[in-house]
Image (cartoon, rainbow, N blue to C red; front, side):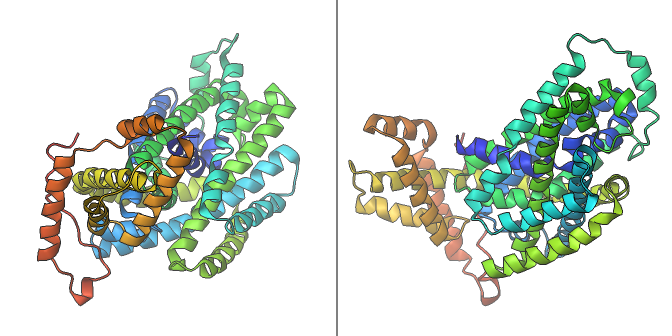
Length: 467
């Protein structure tokens, strides 16, 4: 599987949690407004695609290990502290809401006690947190394709060979208490909530990818797929409102109408997606406080999961209706900062993308048995690493690892040449022009003792010729 699709599926797994995969969020935020709510769902999908690209590319650009590392660079220190607090508190609140969703899911479908479903989810979160990050990414994305197929099956059942009284369904929709005052505010408020859910783990996912272009593609593809899945899920719920409007998990209720075995499969899938989101929320909190220490990260995640499990007993449906709108308001500040950071850093991100491409090109040449690097090329590789926004040592290591992986997947010299021409093409003149500019800036901006830990910000680079 292409790395961008792997990242896309992991991103979907992060953002499609209890509310979206079960349909409860869609009922309260969109379907409660009737057919116009479906237009709101389409807008939600577009926002997912746009901000998916923004969040993952910023994470890759800064090689982020947690959300604070990005916000320190793109916002004022006071705003960074506010966002840090909001994301930690919001992630914890949404995390125990997800655990409550896991309990509700298994209770509705299998008759398990509410406490048991939440306990299983909590234990899985702790267990998976002990894996390395590459395996974690695989776990987060594994159930996404299954969920997409299941939603399409449910949509086919809802419409193929059937007719619907849309006037009656519209009237039923308006009997549902909406989460906000109007559908347009629901779009903004709910996407703010989605961003609150996704941003910390999206930064970490992006930070695990050395090639910014792959992170951008992963975020865009993941966001578009989220939009598609959410829209077809919404129209399926709308078509079955007469039977599912009071269900805690309306999509699961539709699956039960089709066949009990399908409902069992979907219940397990929903549980897995709930776990994905819950894991991402608690894991991002642990990474925030770990300061690079694996031992500390595990202690933190065990502690917050135990507390979250205790808090989950307030009830899933009530928690969504009370807490989600509040968190959505808090997320508005987050969206503003993300847009600002993206617009401010956009030119730098484009150039950093080309720098890393060139480094990868040189690394491929170094590790290829058919070619050797000249002394000038070695010097260029180290220069590009030194002026990069990312940590120089880890960037060089990751570039070399990426090169070795590409070489292992290309069997012939021609195949490697074609890959380089398609994926690693750069404008040499533009790169050398900007190397000179950045070196001059770094020479003029020698860090003081108080600023040594903060990377020198690249600005005013000459990328007029960058496509």
